Image 1: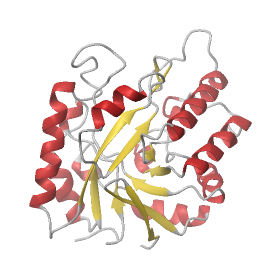
Image 2 (image 1 turned 90 degrees about the vertical axis):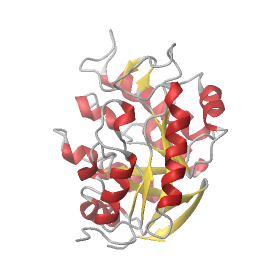
Image 3 (image 1 turned 90 degrees about the horizontal axis):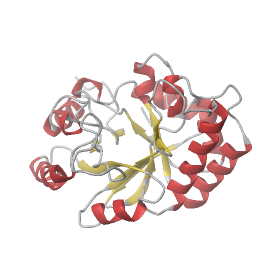
Image 4 (image 1 turned 180 degrees about the horizontal axis):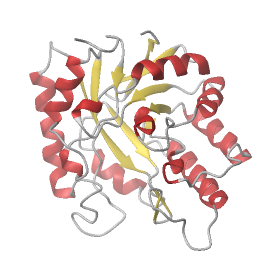
Length: 273
């Protein structure tokens, strides 16, 4: 039985190639179809380019040598599921200062419907690390994270910015997070008209909150920043997880539509359930 509206789309899913997810691309599509989604996006982690070697972080992202087969399989599945449900070919790529052109070169030969840009590393430090960088405070990493996020919005490589405020996953968000830098970053995102996502994965984690938090969603809506939905599913059963809750929250934040992507072009669809 469908569990979501046929007008909703999930733009953030992962599968076994990234090394820390389960299931095949096909499994994600079939899960989305069973849950009644309008479309599903496939967006596994692009290869890590800021570290040397084919597969520098095996439990984080796919190797460089595997990337062409990933793209090919997505396009094969798009053809196979044509007439059943739209499958959006995507990827989640890291924003790392100094490596934008390397990622542009990696992505340019391929036909994607969208590209998610995420800041997972702050000057070499993983935001999912248990400890802060040496001599750094929560305020330091939050300010730097926001600066990098603004740069990601402006670089022209990304259609969607992934999981804003994900620093809170390991408790690295400062108590006073509403800073002038946050407001400037949101202004920059609005100016670039890059979408953000409401990433529901935080509701499935100990942090117990979506990414970004409600107050940031309100600030984004006030600025006219587009938004889409992403489950960040790492298992087929998590596709479209908590989307009903997400839609209600977006409405409360002031949103009336969701961003939808095809061949790197965005359109808005009504925010219905």
